[in-house]
Structure formats: structure tokens, C-alpha cells
Image (cartoon, rainbow, N blue to C red; front, side, top):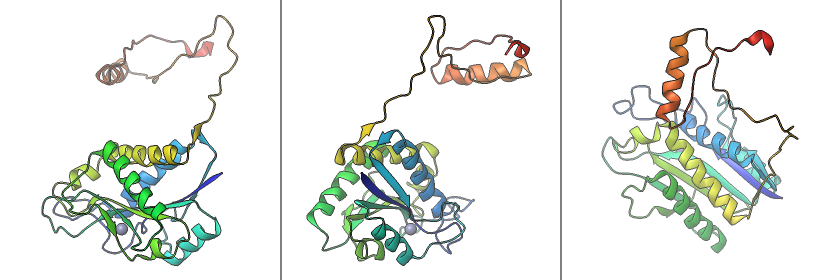
Length: 244
Ligand SMILES: [Zn+2]
């Protein structure tokens, strides 16, 4: 069993940790961005067997779990790897930025290897390469220092960069980042997909995908247009629900 300690940095109300107001009027909190990615990672790892995930942050965001509690949890869980998701700052409204992955300066060579592989996979999926001279960085951070297992901090773009903010706010960016993290874990730990559960279908039965039921024709047609835009053929029928 592979054990992943997965961490969304900070908490919802951690002072200062948010997008720059001039670039994002909502001042989206860093934990919101961090946990969105962590949730997608957990969700897609649900399709794999042989991996157990422990979240180190408070998944409601209410508490900014102290760093020592986080590393204590990861250590007693005997995690094989710790991934802490963050978003960066330090550009002050300028351009540039991109993904940076940190490890502890004197980390094991295995950690260094994971660092590069994780970075490469995240960039492959979310393309947020940016302009950092050293996207594979070292830092003396509590999370990377006090954990017994290889530990990495993924800084997934800058919350005060004109270039990065519009990208990191997007849901599809979070999904792509999560895909990169998951692909790294699947390859590194040779994870296998769970066998799909197929029901025993009779000859006259099929799986039919239903994409919504509406009382107004107009709303049904709006859904149909959305599906067509996404490349799925669809049609609207009147269906008698009393026969269900
Ligand atoms: Zn952070």
C-alpha cells in the first residue's frame, strides 16, 4: 500500500495568503486554490487501488492546521511521499512566475528525483512554465524539513502575477494540475486502476447517459446546445416520468 500525505497549504482565513486585489477583485484565498487541486487529486486517485491518502489540512478550511501537526500526522501515517500544494507570491503585480517545486536542501536523492518528475508532469498538463530561473528549488521549510518521507512543496503559480492570476483562478487549470500530480504518482508508484464495476446486462439493456430533465423546452434546448458545443450529439424528447 502506497501512502500519500496530501496537504493544501494554510486555511481559508490565513492572513495575507490570497490573490492580489488589483488582479483579482475577489482576493481569492490561497487555501481555496490549494484545496481545489488537492480535492481533484483525491477524487482521481479514487480510481486507483493500492494507494491511501491522508489530508494534512482541515478540508473545511476553518482551521489553519499548525505546520508541526501536519508533519506529525504525515510521520505517524508513515507516508511514502508528502505533497504540499501552495500558490506563490513575490512578483508584486508584475509579469512572469510559473510553477516552482521545492525540496529540502539536503534531501535524499530520491526526493530530488521526485521533485523533477513531479514538476515535469505538472508542467506537461497545466503548461504554467513561467520564467523562474530555478523552478526546481530548495528551501528550508518546516514541511520539507520535519517530514521523514520525501516531501515536496508545489507552488502552482503566483497570486500576484498578471500572467499567472487569470490562469490559476480557472477550474480547468486546477484539474490539469491535479492530472499532472496523479500521473506522476501513478507512474512512480505503479498504481493500477480499479477494475470497472460492470453490472450484468440483459440482451435488451444498455447503459444510457441522461443529461438532465427540464420543465421548460427552452432550458432543455440550452442544455442540448451546451452538449453540442462540447462535441456530444444529443436530442430532446418528451418523457413520461410516471412510467419510471
Ligand atoms: Zn502558501
